[in-house]
Image 1 (cartoon, helix red, strand yellow):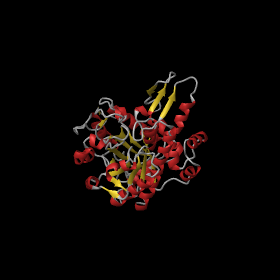
Image 2: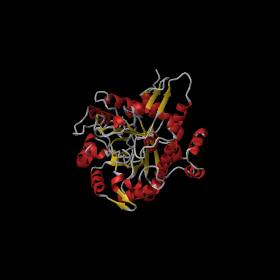
Image 3: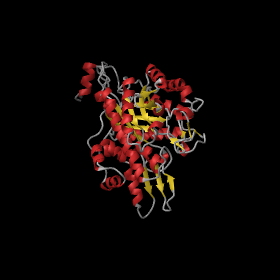
Image 4: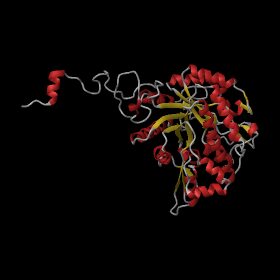
Amino acid sequence: MSKGFLDIIKKELGDGNYLGDEFGGARGSSGKGLPTGQASNFMFATGIECSYPTIEQGKVRRDELEECHHYERWEEDLHLVKDLGLKYLRYGLPYYRVHQGPGKYDWEFADQVMAEMKRLEITPILDLMHFGVPDWLGNFQNPELPVHFAEYAEAVARRYPWVRHYTPVNEIYVTAKASAQDGLWNEQLKSERGFVTALKHGVAANILACQSIARVRSDAIIVQAESAEYMHDASAEPRPEISLQNRLRFLSLDLNYAVTPDADILLYLMDNGLSREEYDWFMAGEPPGHQIMGSDYYGHNEKITKPDGEVIFGEDVFGWYQIVQGYYERYKKPVFHTETNVADLEQAPIWLWKQWMNVLRMRQEGTPVVGFTWYSLTDQIDWDIQLAEKKGTVNTNGLYTLDRKPNPVAHAYRDLLENYGQITVSPHSELFEITDQAARLKIEV
């Protein structure tokens, strides 16, 4: 009987266990273990809920940092992030408090928090505008907003030059819709023209802020968090207004990334106040920085309009994976699952794993999903009514209670981190890991 090559190899060289460890001594890595903070790691994060819109015609400011006690317990909050094993934190400085006027800033609180974050080696994804503006700027109908916000963005970047990750304007589409189409916050308008005005000012502010940040950090990473939405039409006769809504959801990202909107959407914009010159300005090119498309998904992001017009939640008809795949195909940007939660203590761990399965499914198809966020660190106040009234209802959707005690989902997230914390930042990205360590295999996840 003739010998095969393996017989000869074993006779001459011994049983070498040829599983990728010929020289480096490693048998391959599954990605298990808590995140290390290395650039090659997937970006697991949480966030501090920091919304601050006004309601009651500007008379009442809803500041979630205050209502969720972060101003008093910020040190404890940062240590909770570190103790959980996270290296990334979506964090919003209170824009309306910091930016006191043109060229005027109050850095006292920001300096304390940022210094401690740096000491704890937590990487902030710094959120510069989260649903509200300073009183002196009024609201999102103000055409001076983009220029003043760009000044603020550069001031932040110069004060904290070690920060690289930014979300200049959070959820531009949601901001414009809630403020000027649904009448909930800030200017509280219910008009298409008001919506388009708020949207274009928000996108312009975002673009100018990217330019301001890039002047300080040319290697800036921009995580553009936006709501991933879809409306299902449960009517035998398709309704054009629902079709329109499913295309309007792309508007903020279209203008931000200089992607040509559909023809009828462009007509809608111009019918409601977007000038030809403004459109050309948006289409000149996407803003600077390494652009990552952040996609937020909650069960209510996906809705069903019944034949009688009633709207009900449609969570998981498509789910994050299928909805965001459509966004990715449109913009071809790396993807970050930037927000999710559910306000049900028993269901939250299940929802966490379901969202993670969505992330893994998209990565398995080769889409560069680079990060995931459970939002937020603590329970929130009145988000069940979108902050429209000050009722003080506690929404149990955080990793921790407002007393800073762990909810069940905190334990589930720790389990997830221990099992996936060192997977590569995107599929196949082990090819780009250049270190002084021996070459090693990694199992694709």
